[in-house]
Image 1 (cartoon, helix red, strand yellow):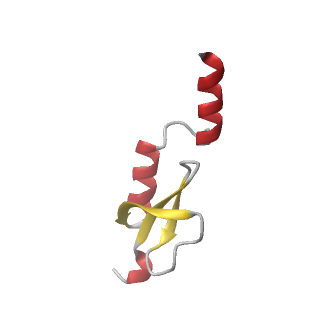
Image 2 (tube, rainbow, N blue to C red):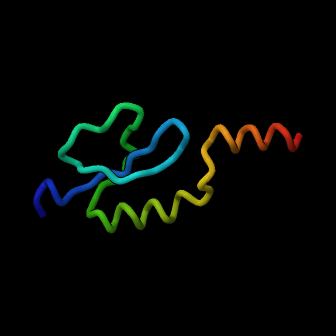
Length: 67
Protein backbone atom coordinates (compact mmCIF):
# COMPACT_ATOMS: atom_id res chain seq x y z
CA UNK A 1 0.00 0.00 0.00
CA UNK A 2 1.54 3.32 -1.02
CA UNK A 3 1.51 6.35 1.26
CA UNK A 4 -1.11 7.90 -1.00
CA UNK A 5 -3.39 4.95 -0.20
CA UNK A 6 -3.13 5.75 3.51
CA UNK A 7 -5.60 8.10 5.11
CA UNK A 8 -6.12 9.75 8.48
CA UNK A 9 -9.29 10.50 10.37
CA UNK A 10 -9.28 14.20 11.19
CA UNK A 11 -11.55 16.17 13.51
CA UNK A 12 -12.23 19.88 13.90
CA UNK A 13 -13.12 22.04 16.92
CA UNK A 14 -16.83 21.32 16.34
CA UNK A 15 -16.11 17.57 16.62
CA UNK A 16 -16.92 17.00 12.95
CA UNK A 17 -14.96 14.19 11.30
CA UNK A 18 -13.40 13.79 7.88
CA UNK A 19 -10.87 11.66 6.00
CA UNK A 20 -7.58 13.18 4.82
CA UNK A 21 -4.59 11.89 2.84
CA UNK A 22 -1.86 10.72 5.23
CA UNK A 23 0.88 12.15 3.00
CA UNK A 24 -0.54 15.68 2.95
CA UNK A 25 -0.44 18.45 5.51
CA UNK A 26 -3.61 18.58 7.59
CA UNK A 27 -5.57 21.78 6.87
CA UNK A 28 -5.81 24.55 9.45
CA UNK A 29 -8.65 23.98 11.89
CA UNK A 30 -8.32 20.20 11.76
CA UNK A 31 -6.18 17.75 13.74
CA UNK A 32 -5.43 14.04 13.48
CA UNK A 33 -7.90 12.03 15.55
CA UNK A 34 -5.55 9.06 15.91
CA UNK A 35 -6.98 6.60 13.40
CA UNK A 36 -5.29 5.80 10.10
CA UNK A 37 -5.64 3.16 7.41
CA UNK A 38 -7.35 2.69 4.09
CA UNK A 39 -10.08 5.13 3.12
CA UNK A 40 -12.69 2.47 3.84
CA UNK A 41 -11.22 1.69 7.28
CA UNK A 42 -11.25 5.38 8.16
CA UNK A 43 -14.84 5.81 6.95
CA UNK A 44 -15.91 2.74 8.96
CA UNK A 45 -14.31 4.24 12.07
CA UNK A 46 -16.07 7.57 11.52
CA UNK A 47 -19.39 5.78 11.11
CA UNK A 48 -18.86 4.05 14.47
CA UNK A 49 -17.78 7.10 16.48
CA UNK A 50 -19.63 10.05 14.91
CA UNK A 51 -23.10 9.21 16.13
CA UNK A 52 -24.37 12.78 16.58
CA UNK A 53 -23.89 14.89 13.46
CA UNK A 54 -24.73 18.16 15.21
CA UNK A 55 -21.77 20.51 15.71
CA UNK A 56 -20.43 20.70 19.28
CA UNK A 57 -21.56 24.32 19.69
CA UNK A 58 -25.15 23.38 18.84
CA UNK A 59 -25.14 20.39 21.20
CA UNK A 60 -23.84 22.62 24.01
CA UNK A 61 -26.44 25.30 23.30
CA UNK A 62 -29.25 22.75 23.27
CA UNK A 63 -27.99 21.18 26.51
CA UNK A 64 -28.00 24.63 28.14
CA UNK A 65 -31.60 25.24 27.09
CA UNK A 66 -32.70 21.89 28.50
CA UNK A 67 -31.37 22.78 31.97
